[in-house]
Image 1 (tube, rainbow, N blue to C red):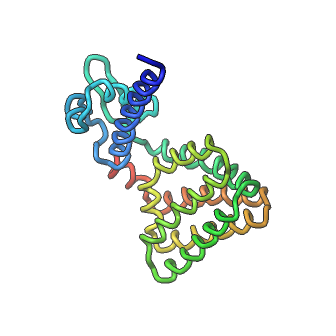
Image 2: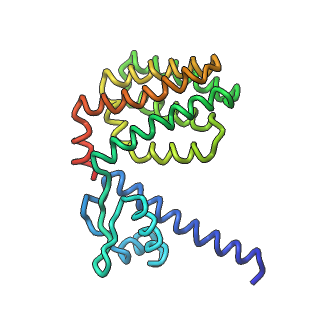
Image 3: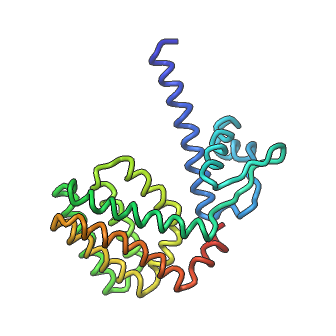
Length: 231
């Protein structure tokens, strides 16, 4: 086997494990599997059309993320995300979002800036019309634009991971008729600070934006609902 074949085989192995891991992670976070439910290697392998090996490897990675617990000689069980996990994610994310906004002021391209402005103004339109589903989609995209604009693949990857962890609870908070428009007002402030190249203000506003999102979730009793319904 030549070096190309070896590299190809290794790449295939890791891409297969990655696909299984991503699918299982999404299923856990979406609430398909309930808390304490056992994940069975054979059944999952058959469902995904793979052997037990990539499933077992995905289990180990999920355990490292704290989403499952592997009990020796018994099996793998879903642990999901606790209330404290949700709070921790928001608090950590508030700091990283601030850093991301600061770096975005230094690296954002003209095209990204135009898309960010368009995003904010389009969201204002949907907020006036009461289109909360479209508002939630635009909210998600605003953050993606900022992550891409920070010009750091490490920070972008980390923030997108956190984003996936709380995606469904964020949809619930943005479905609140008050939070959706308010969130976009905060986006507008961040956008204007980035456009003005004011890194310090952009960082402060992005940090506070995440704090406000978490406070709103707690205020509306959505943290408990999230933990009950989605784990």
